[in-house]
Amino acid sequence: MKSLLPCAALALTFFAFSASAAPIAYSEAVSGDLPETGVLPTFTLDFGINTVSGTYGQDANENLDFDSFAIIVPSGLSVLFGDLTLTDNTGDMLTATWQLNSGSNLAFGGTNLGSVTANSPGTTLIPMLVADTYNFTQVAFTNTAEASETGNYTFTFVVPEPASLALLAVSPLALLRRRRAAKSE
Ligand SMILES: [Ca+2]
Ligand SMILES: [Ca+2]
Image (cartoon, rainbow, N blue to C red; front, side, top):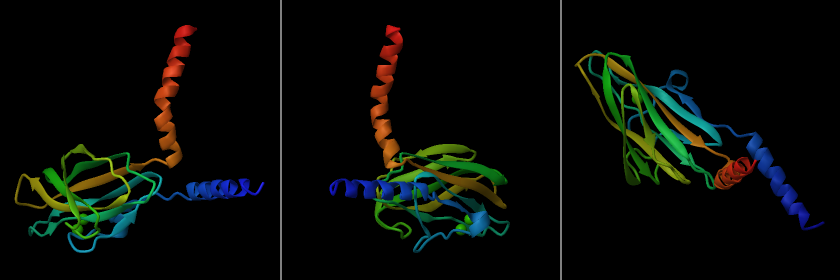
């Protein structure tokens, strides 16, 4: 009986944690403009679909707005799938680029893992991210004219529960069995 107790406690803890999952949904429209450099706003991801969205570009006086942020992928979790989607807001944005770095929530801090560039409008994939801190530092955008042009971005980070990761691992086997079962019918 004694040895069962820790398991029960662990299960309770897991379910309590799972039930309180709070994926990030940061929107500049609600929570304010993200900075370009320095120590970046840092979002701790949770199970589910996490998003960071906003607007970048330049106004009529060519004041630039670059937006950077950092994320923490907690221990035991990973971003299995992520993407960056751009749309034009005003004018005709062409592309936007963020540098992806690991190990730091400082703009450009840590290890450079490469850059994430999408067309506007368009979508590009973000590499799978294991547990660590990452910063997405906006380094550039391209547009068609020297005028007020702004674009919208949405970063999406899909973080599966460890339980569903385990399911994903066994699902090919399950599929194979199902297929075999279907064939033998
Ligand atoms: Ca902005
Ligand atoms: Ca900004």
